[in-house]
Length: 107
Image 1: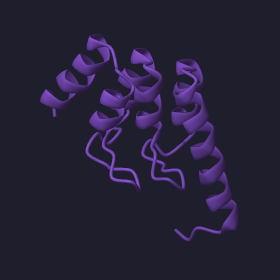
Image 2: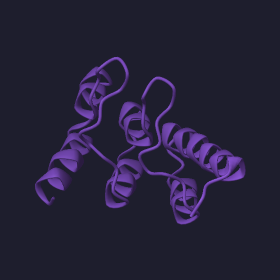
Image 3: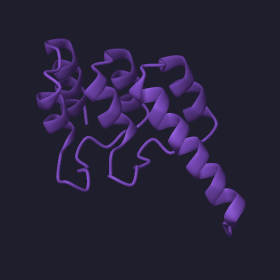
Image 4: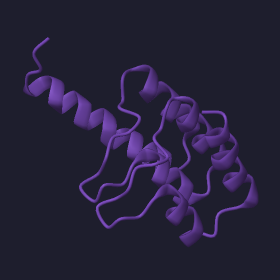
């Protein structure tokens, strides 16, 4: 299947929307965006993913939702930060760290 500029635009709009929903902890919006094809591992120009944004804001339900949807916890931003680096920098809660670790063990 060929992708045209409309497909790319749709992916970009969905991805950017997913980034914002994850950043602000709008788990219901994240769920809807994923249902409509938002790329769970979409990256900003800085290489940040929705999971990194949710981790950075400390939103456990959104983190759990993204992980269940297949978010890649092993990716790195353009500056070399991992999801776990973001969690450390944000002083993430023990609950959030546990969510990242438990989900990783289930892979």
